[in-house]
Image (cartoon, rainbow, N blue to C red; front, side, top):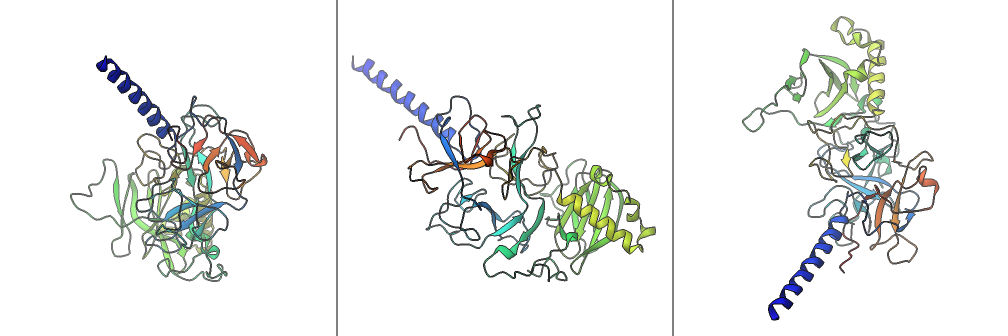
Length: 393
């Protein structure tokens, strides 16, 4: 009899553990709401007006968004990390989806604003609309940061156009748009060049970059300037590879984008003296880069896909690098009437305002989501916070 009772207890405990495990699995940053999940149908409200994307600029390149920088969902008052701001990338032992508390080392840090970020998706599901199979990204088309939004920063961002990218000052010229930090390649056993890739070399003390391409012309050509630093380009079979001399700033313009430009022949050495033509081409290339609808280096994954976890950044050679983003935008900052969704919170404690216990969702319940002050958690919404609800508590 005792043995039977013990087995019954063990079965019941195991069942409860399984339920709790499923619940915990549900409530993880970047997971999508699935049929049968316990939070389906929750009433959720729009986040406060002015909510934006903030960047703690701690990387090697001041005023440029790069891989070391920490990304936050910055709720009003914006410009500094405050209690209950959400980390969209991990910091120290704090994972993506965690909330800032007064006791954290990243509390009260100055935040720069991204330039025109938006949340979009890759259309992998096969339909025109956003599907469960489609991964979601925070896309930042321009890597220079809006440092004027920092408290105490120089508000005249257009006055400093002659500084180099290592000066620590803001460079606002459109020539500087679209570049990302890419350290120079160093040869060695641990840094083997992938099959099908090439090592290209520029003129500034042997700066090298590894690109997944064959090189049509290994000789770099000067194409323009970023501040006082020249920009050189090398042509491959798949695209054009730009580098700001004297820095580790690197940019790729695919051949598909380059074909939209009618004057790529001005890259040829024979036309190098055509300053006006070169400047026109540079402006066009930078415009294409800044308006790119492809995933780029340091975009943030907001859902997990193919072994790449939510809260990580896209880097070179990742399977989802340079992938076409759907023109159907989910959320823009600031919000737009054409957005397909909105960022909303579940008011768990019922006090009528967003605070510590509340869960945040990327809600795609209704087209034009930001026009509706409320919505309901539905299948395919994305959880943007961790661990604030538990069926087993």
